[in-house]
Image (cartoon, rainbow, N blue to C red; front, side, top):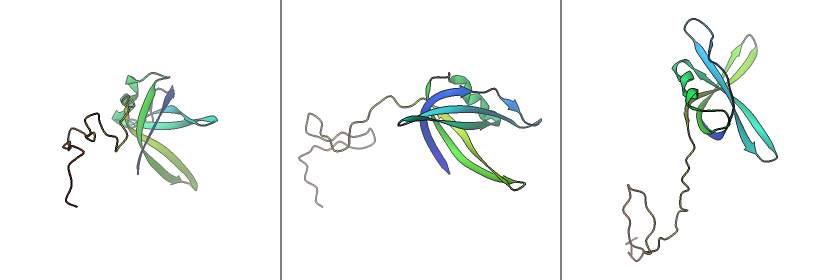
Length: 122
């Protein structure tokens, strides 16, 4: 399962070598959810530990992650395994269905821009 969330980088930890061939790094994202902020801990593993180097505490980030769970000796563990980090989009999209000044609908670069007076056959 893949998820994404945006928030402020609250705390980042150093990379830890768990074994001779496995390393992990944790960080905490602060997410504003109304009256109380939520502090969510994520984990980066192996070569993805370096993804955190480009970000500073207090900076807004968007995190893509997988939800992982396992059982060990009758106990259950859940990890939020981050696999991609990026700066959140600063652009605000124009709402769908809003006409431009020339009477046409806005479009992306991949879609043709038809004038509003075109009459479709269906």
